Length: 91
Length: 403
Image (tube, rainbow over all chains, first blue to last red; front, side):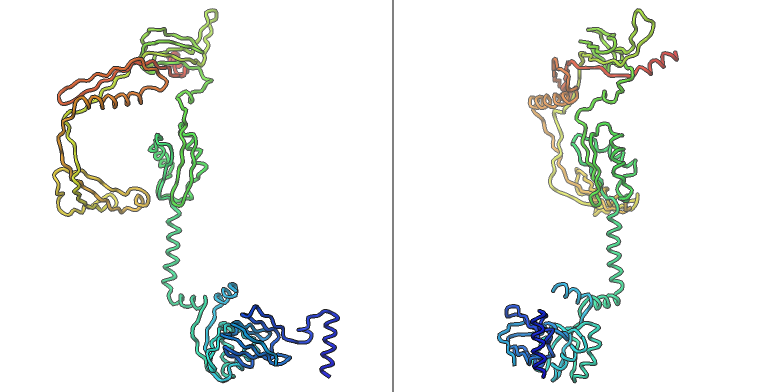
């Protein structure tokens, strides 16, 4: 059922050229090189250490592996991570 | 990013250290409660450091307890905390404000008057005039009306062609340009009738009357003040007297004399390099001389370093330093021939400065004479110069009528 609704939303977003992260409530991830990562629409932090950060989102947990990472700032909608980023995975 | 940092500085923020096992939960709770956290740095599994605004910090306390953590305030940064500190040190703030106030106050006065101009300009007169107008060291800057003063100076001094007054900091700079061609004639009103009279005793050589009647002839000896070209023109056929503004040149033979004396055996003072200082404390008009014993020299020269200018002229307190330099008095006999030569140069130079520029030198005679211990040089210069000087007739007529 929910898959059907999602499909519909996707088609609607395609047809009306609406931003999908809003229509489908998906995280929007922006990276600057490998030094900064910017995630909009997150759903909280699951794990946080200098080498590994896991962030919850609608499509599952995003795992970021890196070195000397810190959370530059965090509010309810977005989170900014800086440091040396090696790997991003969706689980 | 700089703007955000500045904003945070002005708002003030707290650096806190959180200890606990559920730090992720704490972060999530903070974000859910709309508390802005930044620069979150995880040290190890149980500790992290973060920055939070003052307002956020108060709300954060509840969340920390809820998340089952402990917190420490590491430091408080930003303007509100600095101001708080200053509140406890009121005298520091008062002193700072007072200092700025004093600087503003002192820089609102003129402490130095500087006159920039050609070397031959007589600065003393201008300073005297400014003093009379109330422009002296220690007055407020706002009193000086630059434009008006410039006009006044130009009106008062005929020999100044250009004047510029500028206040630079606490200095009043008066820039002056002297008029290069300036004669007494420029002052005389061309519409008023006048005579040309002799300005010194002379023998007339040539009279060129452009306007008016010449009343002297070649070879005549005239005294100072005697009329040479008259502006009173009387026609033979008419009875009326016509008054004109006479113009013309009167060339006459004049003599210029000068003598200078120079001792042949001369005493000169030679500094030995030994110095002695003493100080004088001046309070108002009274002074105390602080001396460390008597001056240990038999012959000495005294130099006084008196700070009378600027700031010191206003406060009634001053320290004057007296410097005594030991000198040795030596008697020197000078060579007569070389002395004659040097006197020759000096006397000629002096004479050339005194005689008018447009005159023609006919002859120059220099005599030397030794008398007692002195060598006396006498100069006699024969020259032809214009001796005419304009003088209004009006006064004379009045005198004539009175008689």
